Image (cartoon, rainbow, N blue to C red; front, side, top):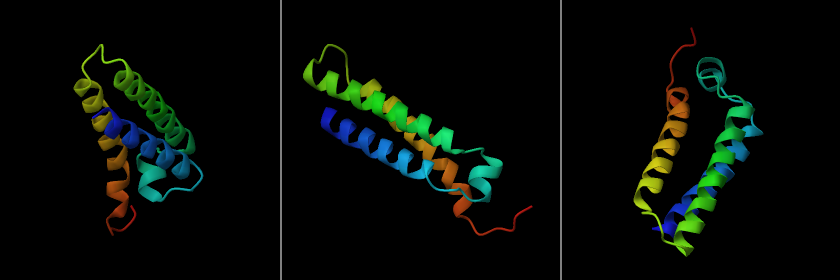
Length: 92
């Protein structure tokens, strides 16, 4: 599970860095205030979680599941910021 968490967190960091270089759509930038700094913050948090997964994989002193659950929740909240923009509705 530590390897899965590490891969997931590194993928999240890559996604956050990639999205920080792209101008967002109306909902992403206008309504949800997902600026380049927001994406960089998510990438930074993902790298911190990747470090935690690597440490917990090497030295299993704490249970891994709560850390993985926290990161999955963070990733879901980050991903939902794009979900509204994917719908084809008129801009207000």
